[in-house]
Amino acid sequence: MKKTIAIIGCGNLGSAIAKGILEKSSDKYNVIATRNKVELLTPLQALGVEVSNNNIDAVAKSEIILLAVKPYLVATILNEIKNVLNPAKVLVSLATGITIADMKLILGDTIPVLRAMPNTATGVGESLTCLCSADSNSEKRIGEVKNLFDLIGESIVIREDLMDGATVLGACGIAYVMRFIRAMVQGGIEIGFDAATASKIANQTVKGAAQLLILGQTHPEQEIDKVTTPRGCTIVGLNEMEHQGFSSSLIKGIITSYKKIENTK
Image (cartoon, helix red, strand yellow):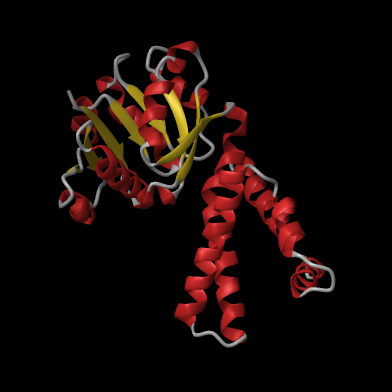
């Protein structure tokens, strides 16, 4: 029997999750997507998603509820749907900075509540999703939720106090990597490639580099050592990047993003 998933506040991330789930496991799940401007969900409707602007009805029909709204809307939505939640359902919040304790102040202790932080690579089945729970009631459901997110990439279970860091490294990290790829493309154009060719080279190079680390279970420096040769062009390029603050600027950006989350609590 199919389970039904409600994605409440289905924007870019929610849409990517819906597409990923249906592409991988439409035989196991039905998906209901809600947002105020329901006409924006028409592309999902064409894929078989039930679309609606009625959050209460969507939650009432579902076993798994993914809360994909902005953090400042979480309390409002929880108060709206709490009367149709029950211990047989599981609520999974994707909102940055809103703790399980914050949500339980509204919902009480009987509703299983988890947090998840995927990224927009869900749409191509390559997300890394971090999951956490905070009590035994929720821990009983984490395997079920992990199986769901494993359909759209990989998922890991972490402590809740690491969730803000997971947001920065995993979700914001998509943008950091995109900016790096953009810079590679711009550099490629400057040395003679057209934009399309430079993009193809940069994209595949980044994909290949990631696969070397994932499949080989190696450290980046080990792979760097295989490419650099004495007096070669690679080492002089790497050294110039470091002289210009490449690694330090990336680390500072990660820390700045993290502080932004912490300061908004």
